[in-house]
Amino acid sequence: MFYHSALGTLAFLASASGYVWPSPQLDALESARFDQEGFNANPVAFFVQPCDSFINGSNTGRSNAADWIRTAYHDMATHNATDGTGGLDASIGFSEEQARPENAGDGFSNTMQLATIPVSRYLPLLADSIALLALLAIENCGGPEIAFRGGRVDAGVPNAPGVPQPQDDLDSQTASFARQGFTQTDMIGLVACGHTFGGVQHDFFPDIVNVLNDPTDLADVAHFDTTFVTFDNNVATEYISGTTRNPLVVGFNDTTNSDKRIFGSDGNSTMQSFANSPATFASTCADLFARMLNTVPSNVQLTDVISPLPVKPSNIELSLNGDTLQLSGQVRIWNITDSTHTVNMLLEDHNGGISNITLEFAGLSSSTGGKYSAAWYDFNATDRLSTLYLDAAAGVKSLSFAVDGALEDQNGLGFAIQDGFLFSQTSCQVAVPLSGRIDVAVWNGVNPTRVFLQEITVTTDSVQRIVVTELDILPPAEPVPANSAYSIWSINVTDVGANYGIGAEIDGVKYPVTDPHSFTFPLCQT
Ligand code: HEM
Ligand SMILES: *[C@@H]1O[C@H](CO)[C@@H](O)[C@H](O)[C@H]1NC(C)=O
Ligand SMILES: *[C@@H]1O[C@H](CO)[C@@H](O)[C@H](O)[C@H]1NC(C)=O
Ligand SMILES: *[C@@H]1O[C@H](CO)[C@@H](O)[C@H](O)[C@H]1NC(C)=O
Ligand SMILES: *[C@@H]1O[C@H](CO)[C@@H](O)[C@H](O)[C@H]1NC(C)=O
Ligand SMILES: *[C@@H]1O[C@H](CO)[C@@H](O)[C@H](O)[C@H]1NC(C)=O
Ligand SMILES: *[C@@H]1O[C@H](CO)[C@@H](O)[C@H](O)[C@H]1NC(C)=O
Ligand SMILES: *[C@@H]1O[C@H](CO)[C@@H](O)[C@H](O)[C@H]1NC(C)=O
Ligand SMILES: *[C@@H]1O[C@H](CO)[C@@H](O)[C@H](O)[C@H]1NC(C)=O
Image 1 (cartoon, helix red, strand yellow):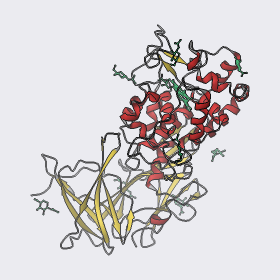
Image 2 (tube, helix red, strand yellow):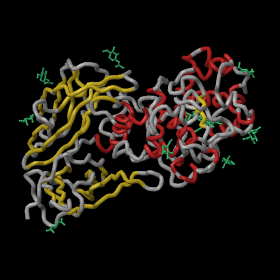
Image 3 (cartoon, helix red, strand yellow):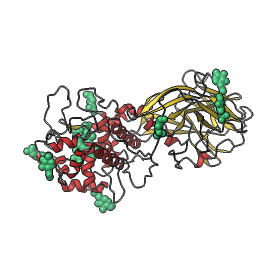
Image 4 (tube, protein in one colour):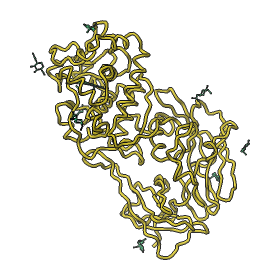
């Protein structure tokens, strides 16, 4: 009775608005994709903004944005469309792949270094981060919007080689793109779409680029077009007008002029269409980039396209304090640019009671280079931590919202809240070291087959994957009542400050792991 039936089954069903909240993976992907600047900004977008930012400072001629786009392409380019192996699976993180001649340059070590910060505890996978960062680099630097799907899976071993190189002849490059799943016309497009960013470095390609002696281009990068941190069709207009300085078109050694061979391979007709129309270039690139990012091993199932939820609860935290449930959080209202709206939250408990709470404006956020805005509202207008104090015995079943009087309840489902297991504020710490006891409150009358703590650490394995560990909590020998509604399950841990969430399997149903607690544990009584 404690949980909403939607939790287990509806998470991945598409709806008009995209998906049904809560869905930890989709919620996290949606946030990484759309909560970019301002209130509750997800830090992931900062890797690629501003568009000319580079890990080693300014005036290098390089940019993180270009490195992410090239990383995504080289990771994907191992795909074999016939047998379904390879694709965008973060295998580029393996030093063995990075050491191959086809992956010359330091762009991959740069991006993989930045990627050690997990997007969220629900996105420990690198492959989705590579795809998302390439997408954000393109979109936020003048590019078209790209349909984003999540669900990529990180490779366990390197993929077979297969990235085309400048000195390869046209036939082998065309065959390489065909193996990746792209036609000759796609190849012309994808190379042009990628090579509107960045350029070729002297250090790694001394046979293509000379030392430049340019104080604004310290890494000696010969750029593909004059606007190398911006998505635009200059790569095509400069090529067609004969003014291009693209080092893979007008390089001094014709053997490595691969863009020249590729761009001219259909008599310039594709490049001419790009030069004629920025809109054609943008829409073609949006399609090709989406296909590139979605080229994954054939056993990987991607999610639906992630679109912004019109109303989205966020930072939900529920804990038990005596007879009181403390619920904190905010709700994001999409496509609002100001603080003048009336937002009410209708909170339904397990007895059918409904509380009607007027929320207070908390802040604005934006995404996609300021193209979209959203406003955030706090759950409790008067509380510093925006905490609501609820009767634990009544619990909390679901939320719905009224925005300027219009009901937002996910087509009648409500926004389900899981109150079956949560942190109890009786959890405590021993001063030094930070060992202690974590108490989990479990709703009476349910049958947990497993309760555990899950820890996500920022330390990573050899391919920068985030390490996940789980600690099982044994059922108490005797029931330890917390109040009339909850009992306590406890576990002693050596680091109470770790980034734990709680997971549980109840009657065979596996529930999403909660977010970590934000309250501080008191000292344990001895
Ligand atoms: C035949 C196909 C291709 C060849 C031979 C090729 C070759 C190269 C070379 C030699 C560099 C210089 C790398 C460095 O100096 O660090 C480069 C950079 C780059 N390539 Fe390609 N490329 C190809 C296709 C693509 C595709 C399809 C994309 C993306 C859709 C792409 C995106 C990029 C980007 C963004 C850079 C700039 C990297 C930076 O400035 O850090 N390339 N490419
Ligand atoms: C792609 O897979 C097919 C089927 O297994 C195989 O015959 C072909 O050689 C592979 N291509 C490359 C370039 O490895
Ligand atoms: C950044 O600078 C450090 C120190 O000079 C160097 O080792 C590293 O390769 C540079 N990284 C990139 C991506 O330029
Ligand atoms: C041109 O590039 C090719 C491939 O890198 C190389 O084998 C050849 O020696 C170069 N030719 C000249 C004249 O530098
Ligand atoms: C394509 O356009 C370029 C630049 O105008 C020109 O140099 C080249 O000869 C053209 N190639 C073909 C195959 O028409
Ligand atoms: C966003 O809000 C504006 C102004 O209220 C409205 O005209 C527009 O249709 C909305 N866009 C979406 C995608 O809901
Ligand atoms: C919630 O309360 C507000 C007044 O604060 C009222 O205008 C609104 O109609 C109420 N909503 C519901 C669904 O009862
Ligand atoms: C909001 O917070 C205040 C201050 O802590 C508290 O007194 C009040 O009960 C809270 N409101 C609700 C509805 O829980
Ligand atoms: C935790 O440690 C304390 C003190 O050593 C001990 O009394 C208690 O039984 C332990 N609890 C669990 C759940 O292991």
